[in-house]
Image 1 (tube, protein in one colour):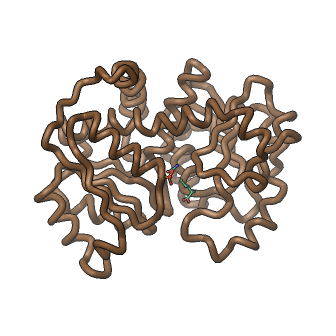
Image 2: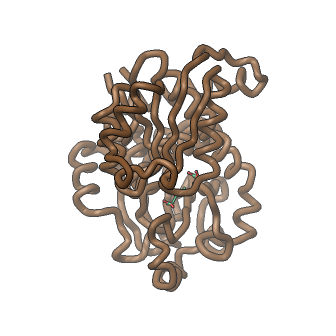
Length: 309
Ligand code: CP
Ligand code: NVA
């Protein structure tokens, strides 16, 4: 049993598939405001060292729909690691709350929260990974393309936290993952090697030339060129990534059926053009909405069973 949801690497393909299936089957009842609310009196503590729209609202709404409540804790208020060590914050919240969600810069801080709290800890984005986003993305791809197995995600842009979580999800679920990034912005070699070691059948690769990369895409995915915490690299990154904009010219080289996804927030004129964004807005906002549906299912499982078996 895994108490926490910190990285997709901790789970089998079967466990991830079951969470995706459960999300899709539970979603219609909640859309009709008729889903069960079995977690009255339970509380989720939400720690944010970085800004958020989707993660905050989706976790808070998910807890409300499940019958519980969520408490927003920002870094200025609680001083995680400055006013108080993470291991003490974890033990206090573990005594008062039923689960913890944390968005931090350093990934090891979320791991430390998980180690010291008795309640489930969910990763709401670190510099290293964004597993809830990747799961919501996989739910969206299932809904749009009917199945996941054999589908190809081409991630155009930075080899960042979102790309890393998606690559693991693809390796676990028999999907193909291609990262198209400028040289020097790949996922770190040790991570990629470990992924290929653990999943020798997986099909994860890097194709630097974006036009060649998207030729076999079922999904063209992009994200900001400047993740939270990288603001000091802004000018360099904008120059370096110019050829990696997902725009009409690039999409003309992708198969007609390919959809474009973006985890948001989107920077039009940088990683995506206004036209491509708006043409794919239905899929992109389905993807944002699916954060709520996936995380409600995840919280329900964690709060009911104390972890993922
Ligand atoms: N995609 C995502 O995590 O959005 P927020 O940063 O607004 O939470
Ligand atoms: N890669 C982005 C994702 C935002 C949801 C970041 O870390 O800022």
